[in-house]
Image 1 (cartoon, helix red, strand yellow):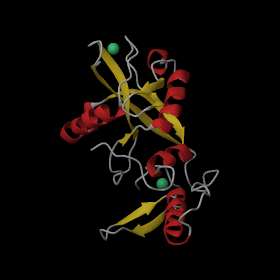
Image 2: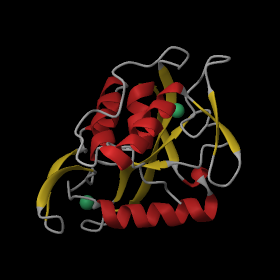
Image 3: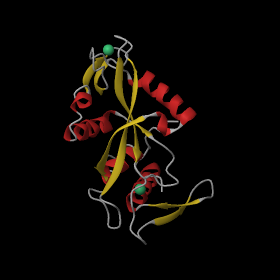
Image 4: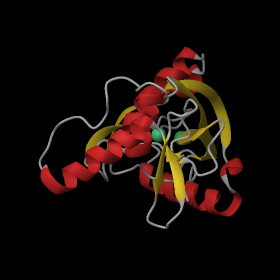
Amino acid sequence: MDCSVEVAAGAGVLVTWDDGRRRVQCPVCQEVAFRHERWDENDQFGVGSWFPSESPAGCGATISVRILTLNRPCWKCGEVSTCVVGLRPFRPALTDPGPRSVDGISLVWVRELLEQAGVDWLASSIKPRWSATMRQRYLSNGCQHCDALQGDFPLEGEVSELVRESGVEALDTVLVADVPALVWQRTVHGERGEGSGLLA
Ligand SMILES: [Zn+2]
Ligand SMILES: [Zn+2]
């Protein structure tokens, strides 16, 4: 199962992938895949939601997720700064392909979870900042010393290389938190079923 969400006995759906291998899909992923197919064929401009509003029966309501960070020198002040760079289920399924990158949407709930867990030093460094490269403000990692934006693009390149070479354990786990399964599946599938970035 790619999303690693827990599925009750008998609730999963066995599907054959393009590579001929068979895998189990949870009911939500099945639903998302179905809507994605339908959208491709008939509804190119559809704006309807891809996700059911609650977890279907047989699908775990929450999933335990590791929030992964990387310590690296800030480009501006040179002090070591901590950035939130990845997400990984605490107990990933064998077919889960690897850690996910953190986009602007997941950073919103990650910041909230960090706050709830009292990791304020990190939560407070995540805020909207102006990016000259992107020519817009976005919710971003920032230096804990000088507040400079730590850009997504260089960060993701660096992290992907690390994960490719040394695996997910090259990153630190700052927190393990329960995340609603639907929120997690949104991270896995993206906003429109297109899938999110994998670090590797
Ligand atoms: Zn799933
Ligand atoms: Zn700095």
